[in-house]
Length: 196
Image: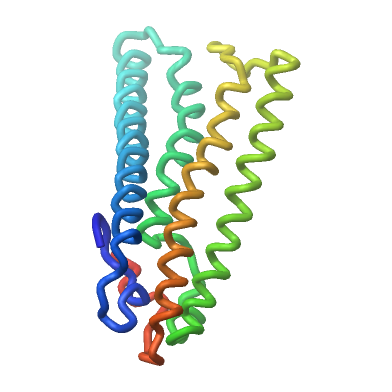
């Protein structure tokens, strides 16, 4: 499969996945890589901005008064853009002592349970984030500080991040159901190899 280290439960019987699943994984992998690249770009831009801000403040006695504020505001964008890649690579937090002991179909049930929890969070981000942003737009709320940006534009990052999680969740649910049908009782750990 393209782009990331396969999870051990992705190969219960060593058979090739269906073509539609491979195509879906390539598309979702590309989407998450682009989003992650944007997150990395923002991190590097923040690093440069903080470095310039420190140099301007202590060497030139001319602080960039909006620099810290812009960096703080970008953290939401970084999180929302990077989260789908972390989910794609199964780098999220799990209780290893339980998931590492799971084998076969139990490992798949645990995976589906985890994906259901991620789906709940994604839907919360989408619906609550959208309503919050529209309310902020209605009352013309601005960010605190020097920039005074429209708050609703920043809050739209929440539903955007939730929407980016949905294709990854759908792909991993599809993978899990394909594996469920193929499961032959071979022991498979839910977490071995998930760490890269």
